[in-house]
Amino acid sequence: MSTLSLTEEEHSATEKEGSFFDSDAEDSTGMKSANLPFPIFSTDFQEYHQNLELEYKRAKRRNREQAEEIEELRRRTKLSQIQIEAAKQEFKQTQSRNSELLSYLNQVKAGLLPVLLRIEQKLGETGEGPPDSQCSPEEFVRYTRELSAKVARRKMKSEQS
Image (tube, rainbow, N blue to C red; front, side):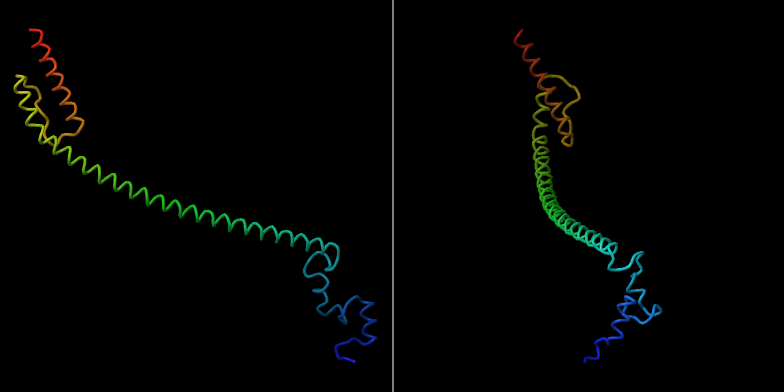
């Protein structure tokens, strides 16, 4: 007979007491209740265990869903970063192009101002005069429109005479 097997006396004592421990003073309370308000291996324990398993499965599913959501957010973040970088590049190109256009416009204004001054002198009108070469595009356009209107009025007067 093996040393681990129970003798007949021990077996009958276990059946009577419902425990493998000789007395209640030993660690048998842990086997009976596991710090739960009901004994283990009871229907209440099984329901409790099933509820814990369901909660664990829900938590595991929620964890998986959140991991997928995090991965999707990372993907979207990466895409947004790429789009931001593209927009920054486009902005820099537009800014560079605008600087080139403003430089060109200033060159055109500098070339046109002497011509416009001569036109105004030939009209015999001395108004504000042409703006300087550092004027804003809006001021320059306003001035050229006013000068154009003066030229048109002068032409109409000469045709009527």
